[in-house]
Each structure stands twice: as C-alpha cells, then as structure tokens.
Length: 502
Image (cartoon, rainbow, N blue to C red):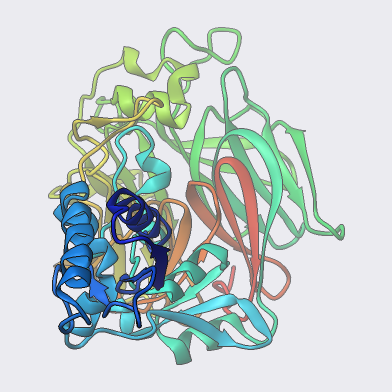
C-alpha cells in the first residue's frame, strides 16, 4: 500500500504519528509499505521510503531527506523485527522459489464449495504456521487451520465442504452434484453406525450416561428421520463399532462392569455380539480370551468368505482421557483394569477359536478389509495418550502414533504379514475406517473424513465442522456416507460407492 501526508517541515511529531497510522493500516495487506511525506512549500513529494529502512533515492533537499529519515527511524524503533517482516511479506514471497501459487482455487465454477489444493500445497510461501491449541486441539489440529498470510487464496479452505488434493480422482469421487449436510444435532458421541439394506435404515449408538437404547436413522423418509427408542433384546451395552454380514449385525461391544448391570444382575463383558434386525434378538459370540477379559473391543470386520471376525482390542475404555472425552464414563469402565495387551485378533465363530494376529500397535483402533480380500488396514491412535490436555480431559501427543497400516492377508485368510505405514493422519487421528467398493479407504480424522487410495495417498477431505469418530456407507446405491461424531451427525452424497453387502 501507499501512504502519504502533507505536513510542515517543523512538525515532525505529525509526520511520525501519521507514519504510525499507516503501519496500522498496512498490517497484513501483503504489500511493502511505502511512505511519502510532502513538505508544505516543497516543490515535489519526497522519494518513497520503504519499511526496510532504505531510501530509494536522494530527496529533493537535504532537509526533506533528513525529515523522511527521522520518520523512518521512528517507525523502526516502534515495531519489532517480526512486525516488519510481516509488513514486508510481498518482498519475502517474491524472493522464494518453487512456491505454489495459488495454493487453493475453486475446482469448477458450478461447485463453489469444492476447493482444489494445488500440488498438495507442497511449497507454501513463508511465513506460514499451523497453530496448535492444547485447550482445544480436537478442533484446532487440522490442515485447514494453517496460517498462510502471503497467499489469500488459502482462505477458500474455510468456506469449503470438500478439499480436493488429487484433482482428477477427487472430482470423479464427488460426481456432478456432491453435497455435504449436517443432518442432526444430537448430544453425546455417536459410534457403531451400520446400514441394514433390507430395512434401508442405519442403526447406531449414542454414548451418553445411562443410555442403552440405540438410534435409528430411517432413510425411507425424505429427509431422513432420527429416532432414539430402539432397544434390542437383550440390550447391547455400549457398542463401539458394527458390521453387516449375512443378515446379521456384528457389534464390537465395550460392555459393562460388576457395578453396572442391565438389570437382574446381568453383566456384559467386552466382546462380540450379533443382532438379528428382523427378530430384534441379540446373541453373545465372544466375551473372554481363555478367562481373561478383553479391555475395549473397538472395531471389527467379518471376512465375507470364511466368516471370521477380525477385531481390535485396546485400553481406550480404561484410559481416563478416553473415558472423559468419548463418553464411556457412564459404564464405569475404569473399574476393571486391563488384563490383556492391546492387540488385533481373529475369531472364528464356528469353532470359538481366538488367535492374536497383531500386537505391535500402541492403540489398534479402526480396521477394514479390501474388497479383493488381499489387504487388511488397521489404524493406530496412540497419539491420544500424550501430555497435552484439553478441557474435555483428552490428552494428545502431536508426535504420537496416528497412522494407518496395511498388511497382506494370507490366501486362506488366517494371518497377516508385511506391515507398512501408508498414511499419517493430517488431522487429529485416523479413527474408524471403511472401504469403498473400488478399494479406496475412508477414515474419520478429526473434523472431517479423509479419502485415500489403496496406497494411502490422500485424494480428498470432507469437512464436517465437528469431530467425527466413525463413518458408514448407506443408501440403496451405497452412495451416501454418514459421519458420526461429537454432538452431530452429517451426510455426504457423492459418486463413491460403498461395499456390496451380503
């Protein structure tokens, strides 16, 4: 910006005060501030003075030169080097090489809420920073909160619903009329969403104190409706994940303790349960490992050929941070201390055999199987065990584990090999994950969902505006993605199809 003043040579205070005001106005304009001071009676303006402290040329008179220099020295004394660097932003950017310009842009004119990130924003103009607030890191730890004052295009990310990193594949996923809508405001945390194709309904759990009834989203209505009085017989205590297979819903149940029963002294331990959505009857398939209690059966999938149930078990429900943050405190889960290490298991319902298949992850969480039955994906959410504490009680370590790992599944479907990290979550953690029909992964990641290819490359991100823990494909064409999280439930409609349910 340019700023000029018309003052008398003897009124230096007026000049410096005006220069001070100019700086305030130029604060983050991204341009070099140039000041012109005109002396009353002088024949021309003084030459420009830029904020770096260098006069561009000699002034028309020594008096005028000294006057301009005095004003400049005043400015340099009043502002820190950091402020001066911010004001000289454009000069800084111009001297950098390889900078991606612009960082963000509208992908297509008819989809204003779909924003393309150019070259993954691999080279940002300096200075840039990604703030981290320990008081609110569940919300703040996100790529969209990166500060890039030298590129105003980056502001587009805050008014978008979809961030596309791979432009061709991302737009193919979205299709011609993508939409994201925050469907329901509902207290508590929402987990275990599962689509029942025969009913065209989604069953899920609201994790709040004293609640045993499950929620149902009825997709037979337009718009869909939500009701909260669905109670299986007997109820399932705190289901944390679910999968549909051969007409049954398989639940990963957190369970209860000796101090919290379902009435009549009935206690549910963490394990695997099924629900027949037609008869409303539930059955316990697994609740121990050779007499030892599972800690928190967290997520699962059912192998479509063998019928084996693969599930993760971790210490989430006994970790006080998780208890407070994710609403498990109502079940009193901290009463029973862990008896098993965090691990991943394969369970064969036909024989009752349980086998550990992975025990190297800190907090094994989301788990999924590729459509070709060759790859198992597991997320590690060990980052939520650090020393940074938010008001919710959740702890977080930015250098902790928050990656998704891929493994080769043996031809007979009984064991996994060749562990490799394929994705480090750019947001909070990679929580629950599900596989699309084409082999893409969709993972709940902080305030949004990330879509990855089979190699773990980020294709696009759905912005939800609230922290989500789990996702589920649904709808008659399986082209809806429902996002479950803290205090809200959202829906995406796009071209990406979910798995074929059998």
